[in-house]
Image (cartoon, rainbow, N blue to C red):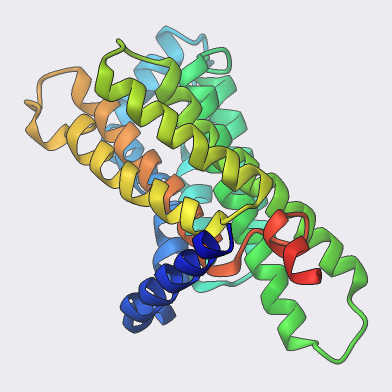
Length: 271
């Protein structure tokens, strides 16, 4: 067992050295990826405004005027709050507003009971919780000399909830679609990584593995650029592609800030 741990430490040191040049930029990349689905959605609604109005009024029963307000409110909130998250300004309020966008869109478009949508958005919410946790960590560093027990507790709970919610995308992947030998193997390995993230054991490396896995999965499965513009599946694939990028951003932020106090990794440090 000790030899396995020794090899594990050596492997981690090698990965650290390889990733050292880009390490300072990972938090900024992660925050951008987390909100990229909101930016893409804001752009899509803006460029398809009349189609969105038609759908809401004809199929969802929105009165005229309310539908305009709903779409404009979503576009403004998604664009402005995404910029705030990227800039690390008023992050908690921006993340709360984006959470509100997720909930209102689920209700407005009637997707609240769609299992795939529900699981994906749980993962997106997990990414937003990781953003809030990162913001609390920054605040703690700014006021390092002051008592911050409450802030530390909040950060710990946000990290716990965030890392647990992040893995729901993979649960959706495992349950959706037809089964094959490669899918079974990928599901087993991915499930093991998800469990390690949930309990906080080697969470950083498990998160990095899922980032690499989702990168390949996103390019192979959600290849919206290869679909004809007139095909109705294009928008769905594009939506899934950018949502997956957002979840990858949450996982990258987990790699950066760690799993938090309520994790096996942190408990081992205490002993």
